[in-house]
Length: 170
Image (cartoon, rainbow, N blue to C red; front, side):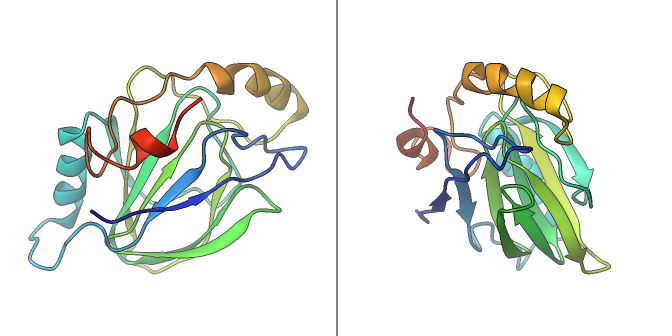
């Protein structure tokens, strides 16, 4: 089982991030070499492990976060330079087979991407989708909602035995 890199991001005054739950970054964790439909391969992996409300697209080019739900991003095709943690966060290169699990509050933004980028996203059950861009009003509300988002019962990559269950505790 691949162990993810676990990264905590501090509140930058605009993007709250998550003070307790680290962002999990899995490198080359999804084998797409023989897949005829990499998007379906990633979507099916997330669905098998209970992460739903799947979407296919890229990552927004503006800084944003979700204050009431945890999100997973899986790169099915291409590559992208992504900043996690808001404007003062960390820039990372993501490529096909990589997965990032973002706890509620984690800022994310696509800085550049290959023309063929395909990201599959999904959400942990028990949360409610919202889109926040870092306004003062959103941040005040988010500081109250982020700690109340239920913890997932499974890791989106490895299910009920995955590292998320060990690394995400309150």
